[in-house]
Amino acid sequence: MSVGSRDFWGAAALSLLFLLVLLGVWQLATPPKQHAAGANDEYAKLMGRGAKKTEGFPTPSQLGETAWKNLADPFYDRGSNDKGIGIQLAYSLARVGAGYALAILFAVPFGFLIGMSPLMHRALDPFIQVLKPISPLAWMPLALYTIKDSSVSGVFVIFICSVWPMLINTAHGVASVRRDWLDVARTLEVKTLRRAFRVILPAAAPTILTGMRISMGIAWLVIVAAEMLVGGTGIGYFVWNEWNNLNLANVIFAILTIGVVGMALDLAIGRLQKLVTYAD
Amino acid sequence: MAFLEVQGLSKIYPGKDGKPVPVFQDVDFSIEQGEFVCIVGHSGCGKTTILNILAGLDTASEGVVIMDRREVVGPSLDRGVVFQGHALMPWLSVMKNIAFAVRSRWPEWDRIQVEVHCQKFIDMVGLTGAEHKKPAELSGGMKQRVGIARAFAIQPKMLLLDEPFGALDALTRGVIQDELLKICAATRQTVFMITHDVDEALLLADRILLMSNGPRAVIAEAVRNTMSAPRARHNMHHDSQYYPIRNHLVDFLLNRSKPHSGGAPDAHQRGAAKVISFRH
Image 1 (cartoon, rainbow over the protein chains, first blue to last red):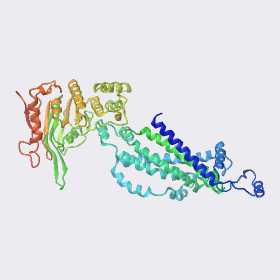
Image 2 (tube, rainbow over the protein chains, first blue to last red; image 1 turned 120 degrees about the vertical axis):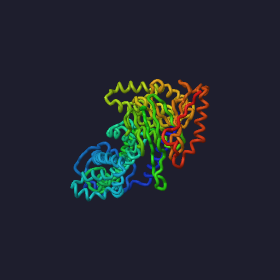
Image 3 (spheres, rainbow over the protein chains, first blue to last red; image 1 turned 120 degrees about the horizontal axis):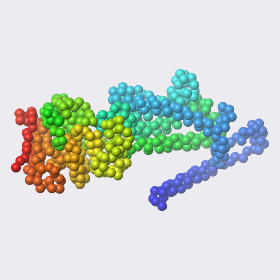
Image 4 (cartoon, chains in turn cyan, blue; image 1 turned 60 degrees about the vertical axis):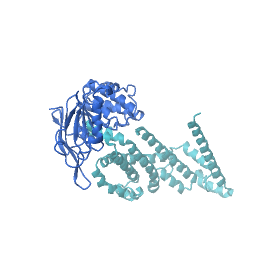
């Protein structure tokens, strides 16, 4: 067994141990409550089917049960307040995807422009510096007023939060393409478009992808908050809705889902980043 | 009229006190077709600037460069450049780096034609088998060979080499010098090369231009290499001309390069450089 793989298994075993300790502490801290039987039965009768209301903080096993239930049927749709976790995630991912794609379409060409022209860089820099630190949620009222559609407003908020890291990184990457490579292109009489796509873009690609990775991280953070605010659909709305239902097990399950999906998105862009990164 | 004519070339930069300071001035020389000319001088005398002006990457403050009866006004595929720092694109393989140049020269060629042409020049510099390696996987010497192959592959009318072997160890340098000599002899390529290495100049050049120190550097002497061709590194020092010329060059670099610096150039420095030719 190589040293590398020994390290891997060692780390994996330790991770598993930490998980078990965490679950153990959690289990001990949340003892199941004994209820006065009569009152509970009456309540159950009143509530009918969904009567198993959780009391207090859920135990790990209750969470496991909830997770299993959610994952077993992720795509059911029983009206506006009762949709499967898969459907909610799909809504969130669609919003993030749309806003993020729009941000790429806008930020990469403009980043090129800013990176190529020091004049444009100086002219647009004050705008970027002022707009960048604004919390994307602060745009929500304006978006709702002008767009008049909560779902599209969510997309806009994702756009506005993902655009800055991409714009800044693209401009930086394009501006710092090594002079040598541009000189090579000049001595070979390479035309502008070919130079942009064959020299500058591949040279700046790792920096651009870094911007995209940062943007995706922010977008996934923001979509949850945005959906809590505008409601209707999405994983953020799901969290808020389950809080209103006082179903903490579902809330915790949703939180974990958000984490796992965020990690998957980051890994996917990381994979892409590896593809365009070159060793110098 | 010679193949390349350089007339009254000066480059002036604003000095510390705002007064313009010429790095070099009144540089005149010419290069015949098929001639190999080296320029030798201390750092800071503007050798690289002269080469960049010949390449069309930089502009002179005064003076003109005429190649093949046409004034040089910008970079051109007629002049191939081998850069000091190899300037390979690290995201492209050896083959693709050269193909990028070949496609620029002959955009109408199909993939097979380009590949066959590239392969010829890869074989020429002894990199057969390394076609699909990325520059990061190559040693410094191999990278510089790719740079040389790329410059030769576009079959320019003239080759400009900016200290191409400066960063290489002595052994590798010797091997590549021999190869360059062989290739130049075979192709009758016109070459202008910057070097710090007196022996390198003696081995490769038909004529050696000696530059005085900057600012206000001039080409002080043009030394004709009278050692019989073909020269070879292993027996060059047995040539009766070797030591007289070598001593002359070293004396210039150590002693005579200085008096020219500072102050206005006197009458004999203006205009044509002193031509030195060793004869028995």
